[in-house]
Image 1 (cartoon, one colour):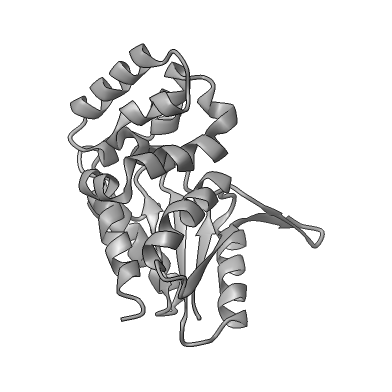
Image 2 (cartoon, rainbow, N blue to C red; image 1 turned 90 degrees about the horizontal axis):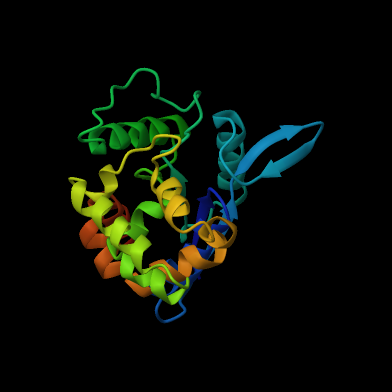
Length: 227
């Protein structure tokens, strides 16, 4: 059986992998995705998972899993936000980011990450700038999850329209995609793990790929893994 281990930032990304990537990559049930919450830290032998704490904890988790699974049909990827990436992440201090065009920066980080892991079976992916970026592809879909949010949706549309690309919506502590959504639809904060994947599912991968070129490139690489 084909298998893909996806090291995820949290339950929202895990839900995305199960609800969207699993049926897309394995429509005939010929494979399985294992979405794993990435290790955050380790203290006194106890490992904490979810969110990205230190790169050391994250890379150790990935390397240990790579060693355990050496079969030909097993591959690995990540679904981690660029937003709040740990300071010790490979290349973070050496690379320059142009806020108007963050794509070269995130690709360079992925390349540094790939080089550090040093295993051809892993496809590193950093989400520009975080998971909720994708939900700006069609804000109308929030209507299926939240009541009385018509005005908020119009404001989300304005944010998307004013950005050169929704992947360029900045990653400030109060202006990152999730922060903007929560400010306009506060209920999203407590329901993001369930609502986030469902909203993405209603938007559909085709539209997300069209609006998020970096995401599209990652998905295209995943589609080619077993060919």
